[in-house]
Length: 336
Image (cartoon, rainbow, N blue to C red; front, side):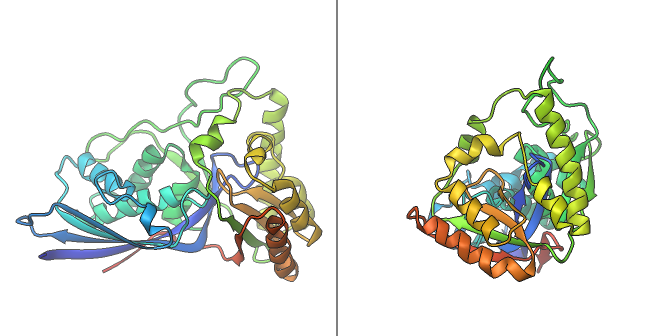
């Protein structure tokens, strides 16, 4: 196998929504998937070879339907170029279907890898726009690409428009980029300061929950009261994260849009939540679409929160990987 160029893209896991920030806010976590792209000589008999190691490697597809390769091809399509023969090696450390942005890591990894092999014709903003198109909403792919905690707002009006008496559930998508990656819809991306006193504790259970299943339980419309509730709590959440104010954070993590409907899909949710609060957490939210649960606390109570959440889930026969985890501030990193 003759290799002409190799690059590795390291992409962080993400936690999205953070309670009231449904489909618009997310944070990068210090847990990573790595994607190595080796461009093969044009004469290569094998046009695609995918190998996978690490956590849940056996569940990852190794044909043209692999999401990282789909993203890889999509970028070359946008450039009106044929993708080169490539060998892709994926090291999986972000568990699948757990609400930690595993699909976002594949999309970002594939796009960044393709852009680097193509000579970086697209800017970071253009890669981000393409990632949002592929994922369907920005809350995971934006922090996976950029790092930190990020809020995304579209410059374009939501489609379909607000219905009379309710708020449509669908996420507004930016219009597609034109061929060559120029123009099209755009997003305003705002970095959200995260106070160093706030510690994230993730509890990753040994069962999966698909995003599709988690979306099916959501209503298609919401009341004006629920929309106002979430707008107020998202505003408070942004201030609470920046200031590290525990009283604000306790209130801010409440939500009326997705968590009341999704908690029934997660066995032992109420018990784990109560255990986290009893141990001193400010609150607990569903990470992404779940079933991973995320508690926000301080350094003093982090160990007790970890133990409490693990023990509570254990009462329901659920084994969980529970750990305090740092925010990733670098986003996707490229090495050669």
